[in-house]
Length: 286
Image 1 (cartoon, rainbow, N blue to C red):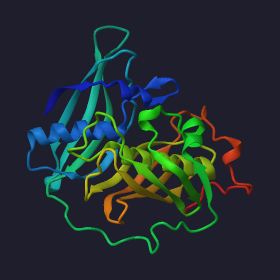
Image 2 (spheres, rainbow, N blue to C red):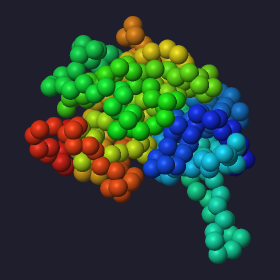
Image 3 (cartoon, helix red, strand yellow):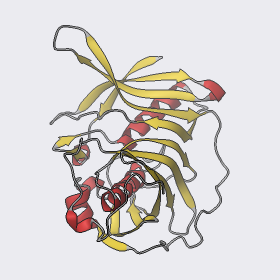
């Protein structure tokens, strides 16, 4: 089933940009897909997502007020619902159109209620030798997004074991009813990007994840605690797991198998000041 979908473009979306071009955030794409699935399958467990894939950016033209896209929805095995956000572009040689996929994810057929075991003995303690990177430096040089997407608060602690930071729920018009606020999830990806710039030679962006489970919806204007753990790096792709907690230590979200890659083809490089003094061993399984 394929249906037209109009994305309303708010001014703050233009704070989410890559190499000077605004792009629709993956976190917002997931909300669009959740809305479409819920409209067609009210019983769908949109708090449980798997096999997410973000193969190409969806650009936002300057001055745009809406984006005309489509959502493809199919019932998959085990009661799952497969949803994809796609657009059509006309080829320069004629009137033939090409379909481009920008985001795909599966939603579960039943609601997930069981909380996972707490994975950390000391939630606010990061193992290994740490550095603290101020949020101002992150959003000036490492993840140069505009104000609406600057939601790592204070310092980000980074060691080879992972990264730890406070994440803000944001304060814009974005929808926090279906999947919670998109900003803590988005900021957790920023944490992974900073870790990669510290310990590898690439500036990666998210291209997918294995599973995301929302146990408590994050809310706008509320602060959370985020933690990411590197799982694997093969020289081209990094894999991370991430947790988002409320300030009392309860689990809000768990995202596993986050896939990060260099989508700039080497044009973007980490700054020298962030690199450790010792030589990093690439092609490492963490």
